[in-house]
Length: 295
Ligand SMILES: Cc1ncc(COP(=O)(O)O)c(C=O)c1O
Image (cartoon, rainbow, N blue to C red; front, top):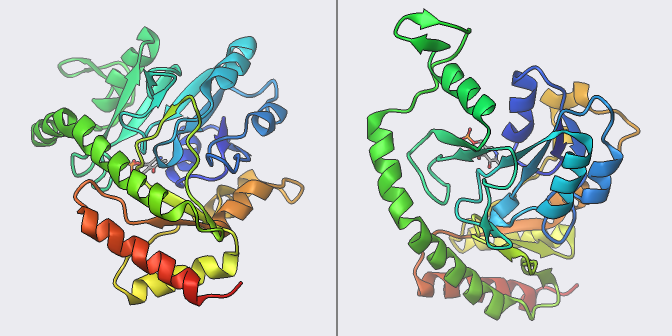
């Protein structure tokens, strides 16, 4: 299964846990989602599926990916852990590929504390997932397969339903915060604010900037920390450099963009609960850092 090299570890570890081999593909540096040309190069007759990640809440470039998959008769899996409510050409992410996975971990655009969900239109996949989540049980105490206990609790379900009702509102708040950051930071020559492609509705799971100078990326993070502003690097170690995945990569495989991204990106505070004045405080410190720092 082909997975983007620049993502959270679970995009690939789940492939390994399913008994398949993850093959990493590079990402594009506009959106940090899977690079279509690199992806195409890595397809072989053994490829069963392409996993796309709508990283940071920006949809991957789905049309060419679906075309490549259809031509070869392979599946497309959408990792929507960061893209609840995001849209590609007006269509919700999670409803484009053959099957998609959502995470409801605490930091996600909607949460149930932990847990997740799978979406599909494919009856075969639905039946398989239903079986696997409940001990392979077809009727009470009759087991057709060796499955798992992946059920979520009623309590989590109740929280999830309430969160779902608030999702659009929470996403709109994220988008409003992103607009402030865009307006206030996009004229700084030392950084690049997030790109939004014409086909995309971005839901800003993260607001991730690109800092032109990698050394200053780290210095900016330290400076902001000294001012009480928490930032994060999503992600400092690409998949092909993860110790646990070393069996799935080889020296000849280059992931130039993914490596660059890991050195240059920095996520600024983003949460629907942030107040405007807090966002402007972050802006003030970012601007202050670049004013005092000569390149
Ligand atoms: C892109 C991506 N994929 C998968 C996951 C895994 O989600 P979970 O921890 O809910 O299984 C995450 C969670 O952080 C993620 O960001």
